[in-house]
Length: 431
Ligand code: GDP
Ligand code: IMO
Ligand code: MG
Image 1 (cartoon, rainbow, N blue to C red):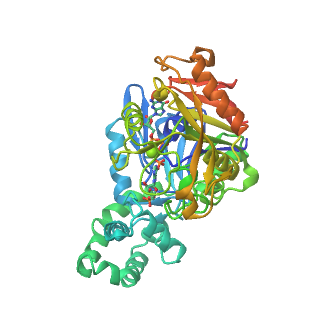
Image 2 (cartoon, rainbow, N blue to C red; image 1 turned 135 degrees about the vertical axis):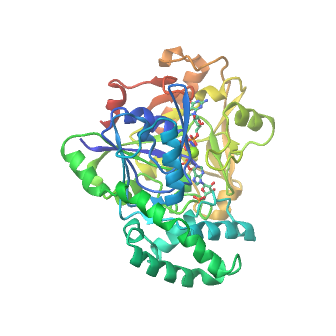
Image 3 (cartoon, rainbow, N blue to C red; image 1 turned 135 degrees about the horizontal axis):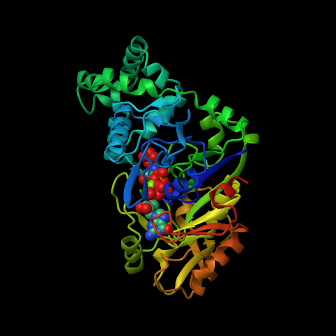
C-alpha cells in the first residue's frame, strides 16, 4: 500500500495535528520527516487536550507506531519533557516511538545562537528552538547526529570542534566555559534516555509498505515556510513540502500514493514576513479570538488573513495535493462579508502566480472576491448537507478554484467535529 503524506498548505498551524490524529487510527506507522520542536500541534480527543512538538501526533492513536525520520532534528531535553508530559497524561510513548540514528541533535548552543540572532535585530521571528543553527550545522557537515550523540568519546570530540567553530558568536553571550557546561549539562542522563528509542526509520517504513500496511508521513510547518518555496528568508530551515517526506524518511517517491494538503478556511502566520491577505482591525481580532489563534509552541498571537487562493495554488503545485482538508470553517461563521483572494496586483498589473522576489511578495496587493458569508453554529455538522448554504458555496468555490476536492471539512477541535466527503472513512485517504 503506497504511503500517504499530510502537509500544511499555508504558513503552519493549519490543523495538521487533528487530521493526522484522525487518520492515524487507520495507520500502522506515523512518520515525521522534517522540522523539530518548532512544531506545535494541539489535538483534542476524549475531552483531553494534548500539545505535541517533536513526537508525531499519531502517538495519540492507540495502534500506530510513531517514527522520527532522519530529516527531523531532535532536542533530547525537550523530547524527554514532552515524553514525560504525555506519559503523565496517560499516553504510552516508550516502546511506540522510534528515532532514526541519522536525526541531527539540537544542542543547547543552537538555542543560544537562535536567540542571540533574534535579539540582535537580524531576526525573522523564529520559535527560538535552535532550528536554523542546527540545520546550518547539518548542511555545513559539522552537526551531531543521534548516533554520534550516543557515542560518548565521539560526542566529546564533536562538541569540542562545535565550540571552537561557534566560539566567536557564543563568546558575545557568555564565557565559553559556561557554553561548554551547557553542552554537557545532563548529557549522561539524556543519552540514557534517548538510547532505547533508536530505530532505523527507513528500514521500518520499507518493511511496512512491503507488507501492505498503511504508512502516514506527517509534515510540520507548511508550504510557505518551506526553505525553497516559502517566503524566503522568512521561512523555517527544512523542506516542509511533500517531497521532503522522501528525503526526510528515507523512502523513494514511487512509494508515495497520495498527498493530503491541510488548509484553514482563512490564513494565519506567526513571525515576520510577507502576508498579502493580512487583516488588521476588528475582523482580524474576531477571528483570532474565536479561532483561538495563539501559537501552541510560543503562545504568540497569530497574524490573521483572508483565504489566499494564489498562495494555495502554489502550494498545490509544489506538493501535488491529491485532495484538501479545509479546517476551521466554523470560525468564519458570523462574518459578513467574507473575502477570498483570487489574484494579486503588482505595480498596476494583475498577477496570478506567487512571486519569487522578496520585494514583490511584500508589494503585491490582493484582488478579492466577496461572499455573503454564513451564520450559526457549524460544529454539529457531520454531512456536507448539514452546513448552511453560504458555507457550502464557500467550500465549492475553493474546490473549483483549486481543482481539488475538499475531502475533509473541519468544524471544530474535536475529531468528531468533522464533515467527511469521501467514502471509506479514514482508510479511503490512502487511495
Ligand atoms: P498544526 O500545527 O497544523 O497541527 O495546528 P495547531 O494545532 O498549531 O493549530 C490548530 C488549532 O486549531 C488547534 O488549537 C486545534 O485544536 C484547532 N482546530 C483544528 N481544527 C479545528 C476546527 O475545525 N475548528 C476549530 N474551531 N478549531 C480547530
Ligand atoms: P506547525 O508544525 C507556524 C515559523 C516561525 C518563524 C519561522 C522560522 O505547528 O505548523 P523556526 O523556529 O522554524 O526557525 O522559525 O517559521 N514556524 C511556524 N509557524 N507553525 C509552525 O509549526 C512553525 N514552525 C516554525 O514562527 O516565522
Ligand atoms: Mg502548530
